[in-house]
Amino acid sequence: MQKKDKVNSTVSSFQLPAKPQVLTELQLEQSRPNPSMQVFSEIISKDVALSSSLLKTVNSPAFGLKRTVTDIKQSVIMIGYSGVTNIASFYQLQNSFKEKAAISLEKFWDTAMDTANMMSLLLENLSITLSCTKEDAYAFGLFRDCGIPLLAIKYTDYKEVLIEANSSPEQEFTSFEDNRYETSHATMGYYMAHSWNLPKNICELILRHHEPDFLASSDSDESQKELYALIKIAGNTLSQYKFAKDDCEWFLAKDHVLDFFAISEPDYQDIEDDLKEAFSVQFG
Image 1 (tube, rainbow, N blue to C red):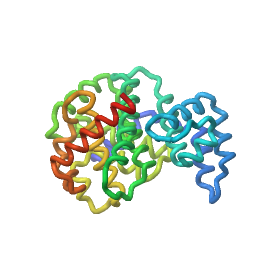
Image 2: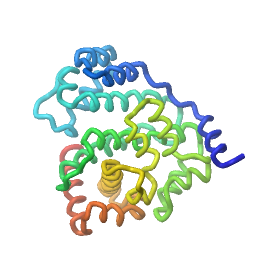
Image 3: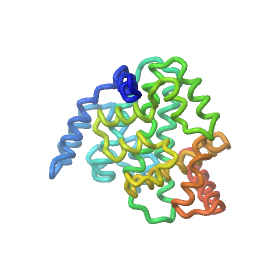
Image 4: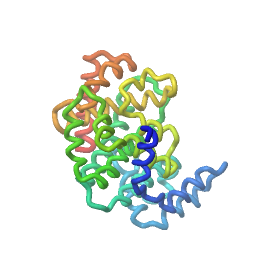
């Protein structure tokens, strides 16, 4: 059996959560030439728990709204169709994984939200003109590692693999998963995101976010490279904030990221310090 066949066989052994009907309806309405804000709001409002979660998230410091949003239509007005759909997708994704896992999924989802929030803060604090959007940055933060729950549920020894990968910064993170399972959370996250019809550029980034040479690739656009570099900074800053140490990926990514943004080491340290302080004030 060829390697590709083995990978396909492994991927097919996973039971991907079915895309919820509410997302199908939201994406269909959003794809129309002139989507109806009223219809969009009504789709979400049918699910009380989803509506509550959406309003809580929209009113969080991450969005920095000047006034409290009290209904779904206001949410659509303030953060747009894509922003609302991304939050709804994240909420539905959390609720799709109820099985026992090798890691704490509650901590995993908290980290995903923290990463998205750090991405938002980074865009506000980085004095560089970028082509990527705040919506894409937040979405990538939320869904970057969405394949991890799939592996954590399927493999009882997955925590051991994560520990090994996190302890080996000189090696590509997903190589440990590939060696053990013939697939990785990046691969499974791509299939998960693709099956739920998340934005194509986000799906590709989920697949490739551990590639150490991604910033030098010729088959990705500038906004994707920006998001890749941004999430390396966000991830490392979050690790420094929570654990007072570099993220395991920073060793391989650091020089590429600083060169990409033309940031010196002292300037980066200033950015990181500012981010940690802002995160502490808004989300600590």
